[in-house]
Image (cartoon, rainbow, N blue to C red; front, side, top):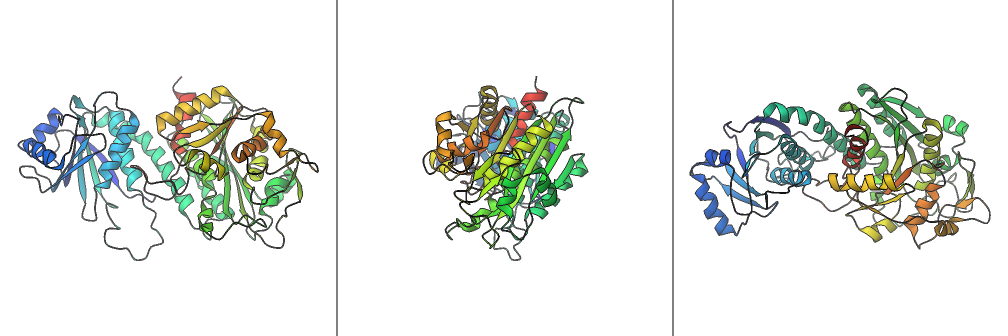
Length: 499
């Protein structure tokens, strides 16, 4: 794991170590245990708040160095705003704000998990712990020299003072595995493409076997035998052979149909013969954000022993422009038997997904499928970086994803599908073409994918704006965000474990 922050739970009465973090509402009111721990420091808080115009607004922080009368190197007061109606995402944010106050000199921090009306619930305290770890994540394994401050908080020992230590530990045992899944997804997206190519990606996915996940890796010969001409066409220009990885977690009822998640894994995308501009092409190492999410999700589900049957499938390729690369004008035959005219070799992710979606639909017969892909720049134009685009052939599944997005903070926004858009990808030479042009580009890409789900309830998430290079937040300072792991873990929990 790339985060080395250590989070533990202690009683509210425990003595503070290092930095002390406390919470107040928008009236600067503190909880009873917090007030007792501060003693005369409560007046100090009021004076400092007045001087800094600190009003206790949600997520705002008041930082007091060497506070008089308090046994702490620093006192940080985090505003909770109105202490009623707080959501889990608020506490994730509070954890992130606390982690942002760590520095190179920070060896220890104590956080009083208390609001003005008393101790936070175990779930709220655990959300703070998750926010701490998510914010503290760094990907710096290739740096041999670090500047002053770059080590900040990377080895911090944090104590969360809670009302019920045993309950908090039990809750975090599960929630911590989800954070681990996000960390794995971030690591994969952040890795350079000379390190993380299809074979290496498949090897890392295979490590899930240690958690009881059944992993099958399909090589080029196996995919060719299955007729995966769409996926193989994308990778034929690379010296790195393509792979498809099928992961199965069987934690639910024996024989019950699984749910399935499919990820686009283009480990590097030059655009192929339809080559991309040179500017920012290095970002195309992240064109496997969907596959990274699926691997992180499968880790989270297996590690926390989710009571669910889940299939995770990823198609792994490199899209390169050598003499063997596919050309605009080529026609390929997908595993479904449908033929595809290649108009633009940079519309490659949908070709990869087409064969993997068909494989999963036919071989595993899931209750529903969700695919994730950094698929189109058009979705960034439409939605920016705040929402992933969602397309679905099933209203119930779409509603569940919308709810899970709100609950997890990884939001989605539904866009339309319709037969009138299909006309844009009809081909005069084959069953379809792989792009419908500029207008409605994200929609026509989803229409293309819908032709390969075989009637299975399905949703497509276009995560081009959220999986990589998105603006930094209170819980993510990384280029690779790990988007989708928490969203889909919540979807699985809602579907299986909260009935």
